[in-house]
Amino acid sequence: MRAIAVSEYGATPAPTHLPRPEPGPGEILVKMIAAGLNPVDWKIADGMLKDSVEARFPLILGQDGAGVVEAVGAGVTRLRHGEQVYGMFRDVERGIGSYAEYALAAEDGPVARMPAGMIYTQAAAVPTACGTAMAMVDEAELDTGQTVLIVGATGGVGQALVQLAALTGAKVIATARDDMAGTIRRLGADETVDHSGGDLNDQVLRVHGDGIDAILDVVSDAQGTERLAQLLRPGGTYVSTTWSVNPDVMEAQGHRGVNHIGAPSAEMLDRLSDLIDAGELRVMVEREVPLEAAGDALADNRAGGARGKTVIRI
Ligand SMILES: NC(=O)c1ccc[n+]([C@@H]2O[C@H](COP(=O)([O-])OP(=O)(O)OC[C@H]3O[C@@H](n4cnc5c(N)ncnc54)[C@H](OP(=O)(O)O)[C@@H]3O)[C@@H](O)[C@H]2O)c1
Image 1 (tube, protein in one colour):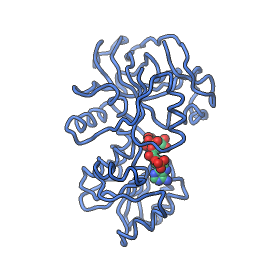
Image 2 (cartoon, rainbow, N blue to C red):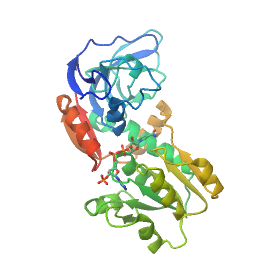
Image 3 (tube, rainbow, N blue to C red):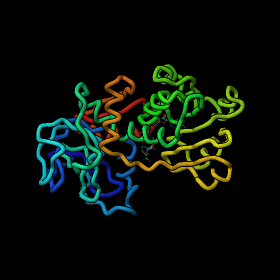
Image 4 (cartoon, protein in one colour):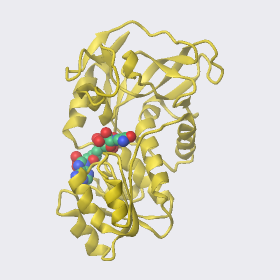
């Protein structure tokens, strides 16, 4: 089968021919139609997991995807041959990922039936970005009347954060360069602040002099987080996907700090499907590329400037 893989950590992702994997007990084999690109894909290729997981090489990249169940292993009862599914297909220890013609998933893992009406390229864009956003909004316990700042709002996770935070009734301030401000407001932001146009703290304080209640941040480092946390009112919450929060320091300052750990599940995919079906969550696919161009698309994502999701057509 065709796949995009790295021969070792740090190598350039390249088209490769590899044997089709076989589903073991409790596993499904999926013929992939589309794979969703996430920053974690190039981070793993760079070696993000090298101290925690024994990877198998060639390592196929990618975790998100959508396709059709081709075969099921012994004991599989929830999903059947021919069903359209989407979810997460990463198994670094076995060298398996979603940038391939076939991938495996555990039946009890984060994989679910695609809702009727969802197309493969859209479904592949959902799991990591929207699942992360949903978990972050849950973690922040946002409520009507609160004000939340979303940092990194124009990318995959950020666009879902804007919509899900707005659904809670909270007032949403989101970062966006000028060209994206209108789009981000249409997704549900009440206000935008341009992170390329001056200090974020100054911009937020100009309108919200007494501070804000929560910050959902997908881009800042520890130093940036320390500064942004000064915007929080007493008892505020800071949730980060980049592990930039020091929870002890936050607590000493009277805030709650959370570094998000992904724990995706089929139930979460079903919750997301319901919101997408109801028109309450939209996923913007910014770009579709063929499998052979996945390496270039990863390089582009690393360079920054994402305006939605990139999806790989397989
Ligand atoms: N911990 C977890 O479980 C978990 C889960 C999902 C994602 N993540 C991480 O979260 C991060 C975001 O993921 P993603 O999929 O949303 O990435 P993405 O689609 O590449 O989007 C990143 C966005 O951030 C914007 N941005 C960059 N620097 C910024 C700044 N200083 N202020 C405000 N916005 C800025 C970018 O726009 P401009 O370049 O135009 O500024 C871009 O739109 C990645 O590092 C990813 O690995 C972690």
